[in-house]
Length: 360
Ligand SMILES: *Cc1c(COP(=O)(O)O)cnc(C)c1O
Image (cartoon, rainbow, N blue to C red):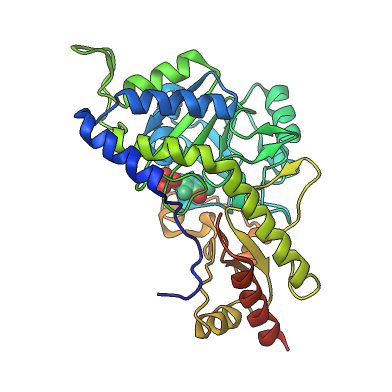
């Protein structure tokens, strides 16, 4: 075990007690806790609906299926993101179109504009590392061309764009509760948030065997449901989300103070109130720095070392892939430093001491 971990799951007695109560309730799938969690997620995000599913990947796949994407339809997304961002697009038969990111690590709207053509149906901005993408520019492009916008909020739960919570800005937002994410549920989980009644209803049906009522199946669906024990945990964690995110911002401020001038720090755009899912620096000797940190018991990560348009799964499927110089360069330079909602100042100091020692 590393002395200083990359991230840490939020746990307390309230969470344990809520799980124990859910266990005692005798109801385990899509019951009262799930319904309350959905209502609280929608209220927090500022959308009419939140619909839980077993992961971000599942929820967004059901969403895209509800939106009836057809083969040949193109969806524009950044090449620099977690690989799952791409998967639901391909699973519903559409084609991912990769564009480059700018120095905020989010998709470059000029590149999006250049990639739009008659086959384009939607745009999937990713609020990577907890920093909101340039949603005004992206939404303007979507409006001009009649496209939908699905926000990938898996790393940005609680982040704000011009004071609005992400996931409420586009047609829908997808969230993940995977253990490293800002809001967690003691396992896998995810949801979509949307104001669109039809989309919410479609995902609700498909996640539960296409059921409209107990014995009426309107669609051929799946079992991609959510469960009561995890919803009980998530409801407690959601009440702490803003506090944990505020602490992440504090940790980022501590890093900035110590590391300014030593490494390239992540920018904050004027519209952004980021939630620092990751604190990602850039430095030319990235691999040597990671090794040096490891010798001091400090974990670090690379999110992500291979650009998605260069992944074997993608190059096997498509031949006309673009070259994306920013993405291709930054995957060799980025390093994620330890950060989480309860990281103490002295651990931040130890990480910074180690980086200083490495660079001198
Ligand atoms: C984690 C993550 C996902 C996938 O979430 P799951 O809940 O694991 O399916 C998608 N996009 C981004 C940007 C992520 O970080």
